Length: 585
Image 1 (tube, rainbow, N blue to C red):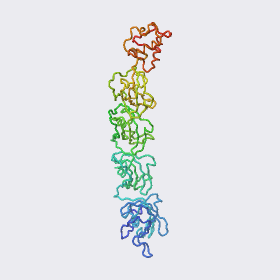
Image 2: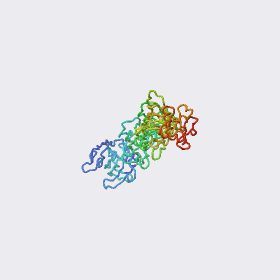
Image 3: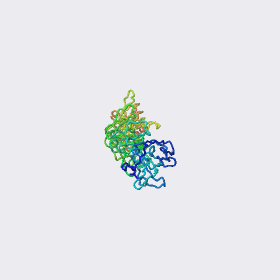
Image 4: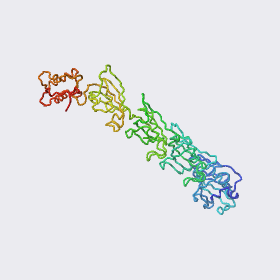
């Protein structure tokens, strides 16, 4: 078949038309059917109408060719008498395109294509008076030639067609659908109506990213992508005049091709979008919320809009730690981290212009990706925070309170702010002991233990700069805020650093006279020990707490026994200006 032979631009004598003109509608339920329009032959005479042999019919045929439809098909044209080929669209490498039932084809083809399905193959036998008649054409078709067309229908459409949308699946929850001026990311498989693939984002492992409803796409797709939910799948069928039309696109999309796109919407946002936060859980008794300049530790799971995970602090078993509102994190997160409570859980949705933008992060975040963070605030603090002390129990008659140099015994539980227990004195056989001011515990705990009565209980919140700082410690994460639950069990008033004994009042006018209990002018260790213990018993003096009394007294005696003869004489006694016996060891 010479393509121009079926155009109305040829002389009318080349398109002989039957006097009885009607439309034929073919059922697709027949697997193979040979039929005749009117009588195929009169007895043994020539064919009087078109003969159609539907020798390959697709199982699914949603639409059949009707009058005024446009069609695109391949064919081989041969003569009925000898089978010799006179034309072929395959040889030209280009399918034939025309409109059916309006005289733009020879009458036999106008009738023979009626009721045909896409991907159907049929053999159409056209008698001369419904083909090129007694004249023939162009030296190619001789007079009175019966023609046989072996046709494969590739496409059909009508000028009245609109895009068709078929929803395959839709998420149960859809809070937002794509609208004009939105930016979307989607995957698609693109096929022609015949099923031949022309493109796929899956094969490139990359979404197609574009604005929608603004003319950046072919018209049919611009319309077909509106109203979609993230995670929705739909089939969009686009007629040629809403696709690439007469020009086609490259070598993959031929001219006048209907396009079928199976689309999965991965992401949607608008350039005017702001960060959104959905509160999932807020602890009771939240008295303080994060502000700019605070330092926060939080866990998170990071996903894209379609649910695909890209990062998680839980997998690393380490919180993400950062300052808030100071540009250390993406702009959207910097904003979303403000106004949070310790222990709070939120879902944060960050549009790409407040995240990683069009560039994304190589091998991790695609360009123009909306990010979703499910966060759990572990703790936060400000570098200027003091130790926070809350008294939970105060015994009556609280007279003596702990202070520097005191020896104390206390119970404690040490936890993170999310309740994770780190250490407890209950793990040991007896409560913990320390001398306040001796630098044996972290500064924040030392601060929290001051001013306590025996039996008093406290909750003490210790920011990291009063605890283990950015480096943390064994079992303590870096920059962790610690919560201590304290109870003071025992208190022994202490002595200044460097001293083993102090007078609680005035020292005796004659210290040696007081020491020499039997008046023999010498004081051995036993007599010295008896004197010191008597002063402690009567409340006149105080030994260093937390150390064995015998050892302290022996050290004090040795310091006074300057010649090491086992006794102290009057000239060996040294009374310090502050009335304390000095430890010079």
